[in-house]
Amino acid sequence: MRSIVIEPALRRLAVVIVTLILAAGLSSDGPAKAPPFGRSDTLVTKKVSFAVLDDYDKGDDLAEVAKDFALMKQLGIDTMRTSFGWDDYEPQRGQYDFDWLKRFVALAAKNGIKLRPYIGYTPKWAGKPGADKEDWNNAPADPRDWYNFVYNLVRALQPYGNVISYEIYNEENARLWWDGSIDEYMETLKTGYLAVKAVDPRLDVLIGGFVFPDANWMYAITRAGYARYYDIAAFHAYPETWSEPGTAVENYLDERYRDYFVAYDKKLGEHEPIWINEMGFATTPGKSERQQAEWWARAVSTFLADPQIEHIGVYEIKDRTPETKVIGDAPNYYLGLTYKDRKEKLAFSTVKMLSSLLNTEKLTVADADAAVTVVGGRQGNLYHHLFRRPDGKQVLFVYDKAAAPAVDVALKRPGKTAYRYDLSGAAARYDRFDGRMLRGVRLAAGDVAIFRIDP
Image (cartoon, rainbow, N blue to C red; front, side, top):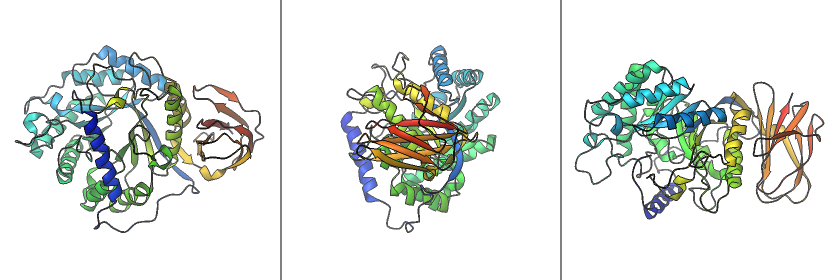
């Protein structure tokens, strides 16, 4: 995180701006609405991956970093998304300072951690002169400076072998993070892509993760032919922490995402994968560990059930200390799966369990192959998602956000044994399973019932 504090009033203003963008929909010169890609009644097999996110500044204690890597191992996730700041590593034009960064990357490699950095944060010397703005979110004034930095960075880290992609800036569709135009971003994306590929064409290049699935930005980039300059499209998801009233996990991927963002990426673009490479829920005062754990179970199952989403980015390992300056407001201090002293929250165990069940390189989304019937109590807002793993095991999520019914779940594909998990990751055999039907599954409002069905 950058050493800058944004006042809450400005954060609220940013939310209002995002809301206005969403409400405005697409520009009038955009193409007509396209049919949605993928439906809940269609089985889709896709690649799936997970990453954990955390940020470090040049010079941070590597012994402390190693403790975070150890937590990643406990989670069963071996990939980290992190920031590499241009302002840290080229403080003066042509003067590269990669010593600490090389030691960081080597430490990650020693611990079996792959890295997916996003690169940005413009140094003062490289930004547009005379602008009344923060330096770090300025657009590069000369693309050649940006090209030279990216090229030298990728070349310096190539020998370690564990940096597997580069992401070009971050949340550029919000003025808070990118104080430039979309045309300036497209030039920055193109230049960064060319520099990365000049060193190693096998490395993936990501669009800087959007604050939300921004169809306007996706349309502008793909219409201009710049889809050739990214391999993966990414956006972020913080519903129920930073979202307008009425926005929740279950409606976050709305028609603007399904009918426009996806359509532009697939039709105007080059059918690049779509990732949610940053998501989380803050345990701010008044929000409990259990609410956070339930959010992760709902969010991971809901987002992976979308036919297009191939990646889950878990933000973040630990809470921020009060003396740490961050960009943003209070929730930024409480997004961790552990507290600031690395004491585990309940969500740590939940994400560990979700990773063990779903981080299997490939998944088949099979919601239509599970039929849920209410057999007792009242139905409120009932949801379910079913996934098939490459080993033949099935993973089922069932929950009701507003009521506590009892349900039967009929499975199209039979199994021999079923196990029910709680949010702590503890599992017990579910005896009311006859090979086809999970009978009498009792739900508490908002509590997610998670099952593994073995073939």
